[in-house]
Amino acid sequence: QVQLVESGGGLVQAGGSLRLSCAASGNTFSFDIFGWYRQAPGNERELVASIYRGGRINYAESVKGRFTIARENAKNTLYLQMNSLLPEDTAVYYCKAVRVRAVGPNDDYWGQGTQVTVSS
Image 1 (cartoon, helix red, strand yellow):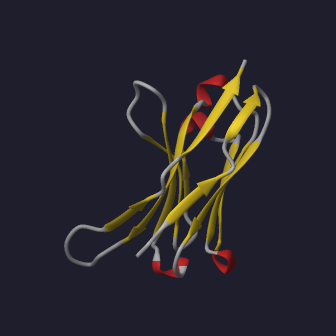
Image 2 (cartoon, rainbow, N blue to C red):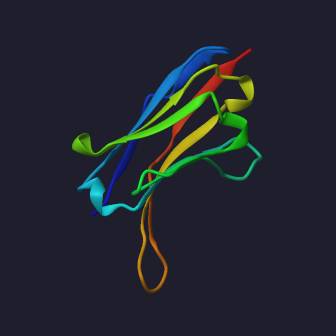
Image 3 (cartoon, helix red, strand yellow):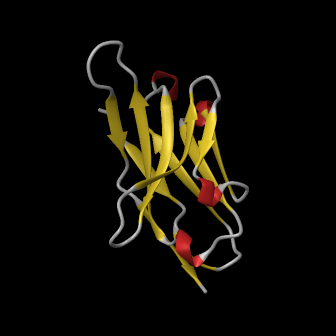
């Protein structure tokens, strides 16, 4: 059973910082892709940042230069460092882990989400 548990969300003023963590059960080497997504009320869930097994990293344009994604395999943990936060960053943030299969659909796992609220 794979479990992803996010933490680190909260209320912060604009310009502040937060670090989100996602603790994964099992060896994270078994996951090929990790990602952070967010969903604001009335909006669809969107990709914020992703990190691949080989080290490739992608960021949404809206967070480039402000957010940093990192994984620490020794602790089976994924992080999202968020700096210079803006009110429009307010959302529920979700962690996702993917095992890529050679045949058939990939195995996708989601955390329960953590609320980030940025006040102006």
